[in-house]
Image (cartoon, rainbow, N blue to C red; front, top):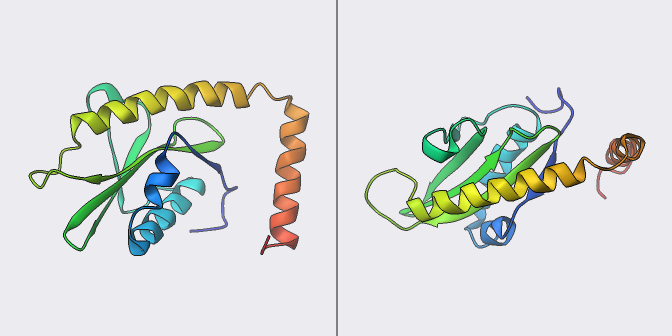
Length: 147
């Protein structure tokens, strides 16, 4: 699984990282592991596509983790090349049904638009600079794996 593909950069949109840090440690670990799959170009067994309504066709996936009677979710998109954008992390409040609540769908849709805009801005960087960064990141992670 890991190491076969070049790892994609992980970009956190809005408060998604801060919100994830509020989750129980076991849930954070599960979300992190699922995002590692995404960074390698694969889909974790815990990730399911969100492809209905306004989210259809946007390459959006939802990681669902049940812990101690509560349900936690993290949502990301793989649609934008070179990067995985984490759009939203939240605890599902409703105890009935598995459907993602509309207010959370609205946040996901808004942050997806933010991710698209950020992605376009990041890609304005000259190609040679991206190549140098990519090489340096690969070099440092290989020869200095602990930072």
